[in-house]
Amino acid sequence: MKRTTTSRRGFCRTLAGISAATLFPAAAFSKPGHQLDLSNPEDALTALIKMRGSLAAEDVPHWYYGTIYAVLPGQKPQPMVNFEGSEIDYYERQPDGNYHGYSATVSFFRDTKTGALLKTFDNPITGKRNEVRPNSISVNAYYIYTPQGYKRSDDPTPIDTNASIADALDWQSKEDDIWLTMRRAYPAGLTMGEHQLIRGSLKELHDPDTVKVRTTAAPTYISPWLRWMDMADHPGHTVWAGPAKKLDRVEDYPIELLQLMEKYYPEKLTAKPG
Image 1: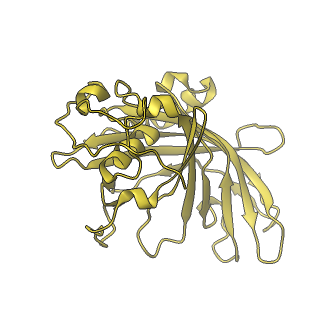
Image 2 (image 1 turned 90 degrees about the vertical axis):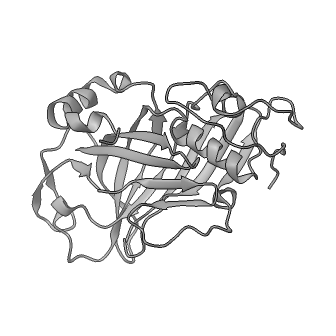
């Protein structure tokens, strides 16, 4: 895989809300316009945070939607319900140069044909009518991102100090498009996984005055059955598939989603810790 090359640079002290140019000192680069060496652990960490959220300590909302498929042994995937939701990320740089990442996430469920918000669901697999509940993720944990790697804070497995976060990230670019492919980190024992594909502007990524890249994403989330589906005894699992878009503020959400969040989950309109 072809990567850009630059000189190695260290982190400098940062305050929330200042520009990336202040966050990182100017230096000479081997390729004009490329300020980051994606094979360098420190630069790879910077690029990751710019793509996923912001180098400044601020809420970064993502609007997402898609379809949840049921995957049963020996059967083709079956669409169950559509989803739409809000995920707000907040990245806070630590004194040692690492980042802590916090999230606030809520998903609502819609009919696959009409798009109407669901209160009940006629489950084609069980034959039962289920009461539908929004999916609010509440985990007393955050993500730790270092130049050596990343993990969730409740994962007791230590990050390998001899590793490089650059080896866990796959970058592909063409013209001004750049794609980051990675997997979300979960502690061992959790039967779920997420493949994340994030697309942004190569120019924005390498711009030292830009603290975040305006991105779209195509995550694929694999998880057990939703609790409200009452399918714990059924074999199989779900696959969530659909796009996401980073926005500047929650007021940019579709109006119905914003109203649902304000009415039922106002505390989830920020991911700022504390």
